[in-house]
Length: 267
Image (cartoon, rainbow, N blue to C red; front, side, top):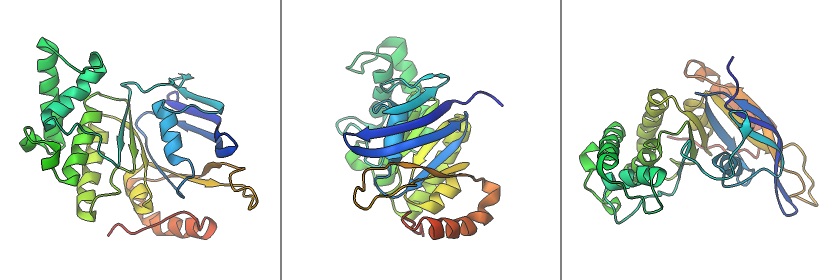
């Protein structure tokens, strides 16, 4: 087997006296689709930010390709949040071109000549792939919630990241639109050979999309000092499109042993 893309060894994160994560030990290989579930505030999004580079581990080591995780975001790691990170004064096409510009050029995000033409061609191709080819000249306020999320995904993918980080990207969408977004993200994952980490509060969504599901929870609890201990990965479950029939059984196991893990229907 190839070397892990990401290695976490005894990773912990604290803010002052509050312990958020402790003793996180995992390896992730290129091409995996990791879904992260757990109670609110258990450190799922914090772990994503550590991979992105906007947060650093307090203890342990977090490696990317065998080297310490960079302490700032880079083009190899793209992120999509639940709240749409688009520029309201730019068209759909210009939003995606700007994402390439901020990657390649100065803080202005401006491209010129051949670079600009190539960025526009690449942006159009990505927007066609995410189903926004008909909306190139529209502005964000003219888009539905699902279309805005497609735009945010296109902004991330045009930078050709190796790793795509999704922080509850579909939580605000209606069930029907979420189903369309599931199909889209699976298509992008396969087409662009991405490694994906996705935080979700929907256990069924986590099983359906991922090849591997992590459950974050605290192994130790102190009622007198609720923040004295952090969460770890208490379950690391391999899942696959062929193994969906095990969902109900594992759901019951999780519910019985970890009643604090949220679960909601998608229908």
